[in-house]
Image 1 (tube, rainbow, N blue to C red):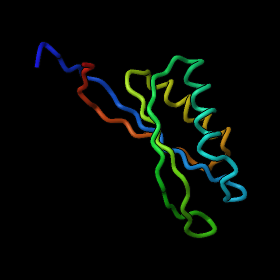
Image 2: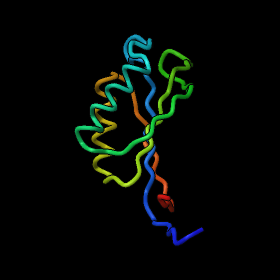
Image 3: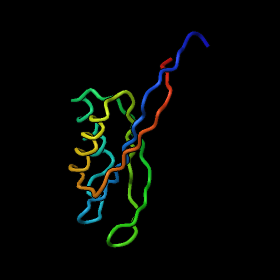
Image 4: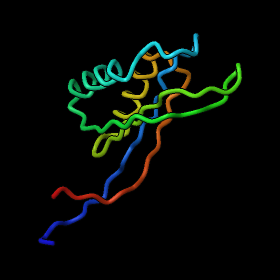
Length: 109
C-alpha cells in the first residue's frame, strides 16, 4: 500500500435539526442550510462534509421528527467547532445543536 501513514486527530460532528424552536416548523430547506454552512466555512477556511438525515426528539410540546443535518469536521480547533455550532443555532433558531468529539486515525491517499 505504499508509504501512507495514518495521523492521529479529532473528528467533530455537529448535528443540527432545521425546525424553528418557536413554531416547530422547518422554515429553512436543505439547500438554504448548505448555502449558509458553505458561506461560514469558506470565510473561516474550514474543511467539512455534510450529511442529510432524519432525527426525532421530545420537547415541551411532545415528540417530533425533523430533517437533521450532520456536519463532519476534521483538523480544526475545538473553539472553531463551538463558534460554528453557535452560529448555526442562532441562524436556524433551533433549541439545541449536538456536538460529538471522537479520536480518530486518518490519512490522505
